[in-house]
Amino acid sequence: MLFGSKTVFALVISAALITSCSKGDLEYKRKKNSTPPPITTEPTAPTTTTPTVGYLSLQAGTPQVINGKTNLVIENMRFENAPGVILDISNSSNIIIRNCFFGRSGAEAIVLQGSSNIRIEKCLFTYNTTGVYAVSSSTIKVIGNQFVNMRQRSGPARGQFVQFNAVTGEGNEVRGNKGENFAGESDPEDLISMFKSSGTAASPILIKNNMFRGGGPSLSGGGIVLGDYGGSYMIAEGNTLLDPGQYGMAVAGGSNMTMINNKIFAKQQPFTNNPLFVWGQSGVACSNITVKSNRASWVDKTGYVNGGWNAGNCGNTSFEYPTPITEAELNVPAHLIDFVTATELLELRNR
Image 1 (cartoon, one colour):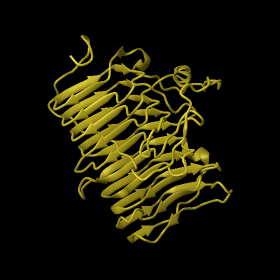
Image 2 (tube, one colour; image 1 turned 90 degrees about the vertical axis):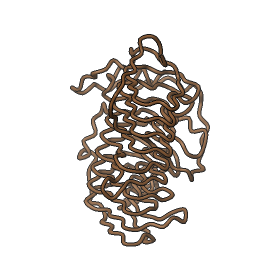
Image 3 (cartoon, one colour; image 1 turned 45 degrees about the vertical axis):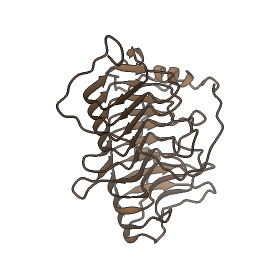
Image 4 (cartoon, helix red, strand yellow; image 1 turned 180 degrees about the vertical axis):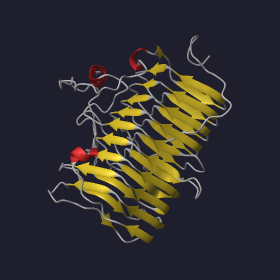
């Protein structure tokens, strides 16, 4: 058995796929202390939401390489202090990963390669270089997870909650997740990155109803990027981003991209730049871009109130500038990460 005598691996007839990807053109690196100083912030009073899983007391598991497997359920496991990737899954299909805790690791928490029909749900990720990284895979679903303090970026293309790299086909989505990067404790790049990935006209890659707070100090990373180095058929809808980094949301290339009904807010910080933009980068063609019905208020590093930008180098682009929004209207709770109590979250941040 992969995780010990009590680990549950159950056969499943069908499972939806979940993946992540990341940006590949970043050069910004920062040195990090291996043992950050203790955090003295008082815990915020928890909301009325009660955690349904005791994530910090789950049965302990060990990092695993899973190759050529099918019809597996990995659930109710706790992984901490892994030197590298925690779950390295390749050439596998029909796998569900749920109700697991992925603690501090020296690399990604979950890597998916050449796999399909993977569903990752209701897992808690803390202090990983990336939470979920999916490469050359399909039907990947990352649903209802929570992420804290992505960090330890040792290379130019990590530091995401979720990153899709060459993920294709139908049924790919990143939906209903929450994430928070605390200043001075994290080192993220993009929170959600879609790199060289494509959905279909009938089933676009869906990035929907996610709520994230905190980004920076990267001078290139930010909230949600679609079409990085190309791709097609993606929809980012109903997402809420508070202080997500250098930018809020972006279309960097590709075709048939839509950003609609998102809420973005950022105060002035040394790295803030732009809330919402369309700009074909890296020599990649882009066309059929729709940006509308978004709300954003953003102060850049100079104190300028930036309302967004259309670079004009993507064909057939419909770009509607966002209307203003207040921070209160984002309705981001003080205790955003509610899979654990405020006291447990403070404990995790001090580990």
